[in-house]
Image (cartoon, rainbow, N blue to C red):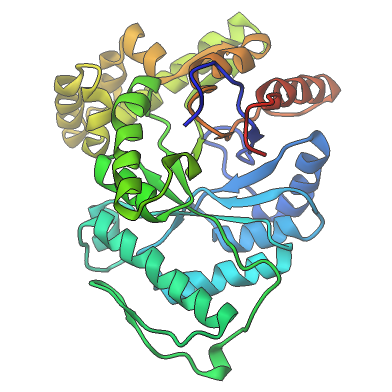
Length: 357
């Protein structure tokens, strides 16, 4: 992790849309060029309404410096070999700019949306990553494929399906994590961790950092090798009047996370476990309008970062600057004034001699 001095964050990777606004995949190639010209270090796309690998392929075509991150792609609905090939192709096409962010997804989605069997995600993710790397070693180093894990057993690779070596075979793997078991897997086998927006600085420092260090000790790694990445929950607007409206929308988002039992630990560290149970009960009864009332100002300002355009970069630095390496953050850029403000924010979030490049 970072030193104890407060440092601004070194990489700014935008989401490519305003909150709750679907991304039009038909414009992503042009949007990526605009982001590169604005000075962003990378782009990050999630797997919601379009395939993330296809989105990043489009984003790679006319850009040369942007990192290309899946934040995140679902791992378990795809075999390790399928994900290995998608990543290999994109890495080859982009000249080595891919950051492969993977998520496990919760039990209900694995079973009811993907129609697959669910198993404990942390040990399965560990095996998944080791299996992918075995495939990559087979292709790059001409090593016979031989992965014998608890979840995946791979020992067949024929020339027809072997793409062979590429120029940039080292593909960073990041894992989406919030609970301690998955954090430990990050420390043991991954290159980076992608934090859920609900993670507060207290939760990161007191729960996640020790869990990553525990995992690193299992494999004899230095935990400082892990890249910490986050798309924080942010409410920002040009002025206080418009900020108030945006803030209420973000308060409702905090309520949504509060009602999700999988994120309970991040609230429990602040003594709000009972509110998670209450919110979950309301969600089961479809009483969604009542949930934001449980998010008092203390909780709201602990989980979310709220400020005007002139304030938000400084607030994010103060809150997360000594904890994370990359931040996913942007504002809508509709005119030259917005562009100037965005450039200023990128500069403030990026400047530091102490951060890794």
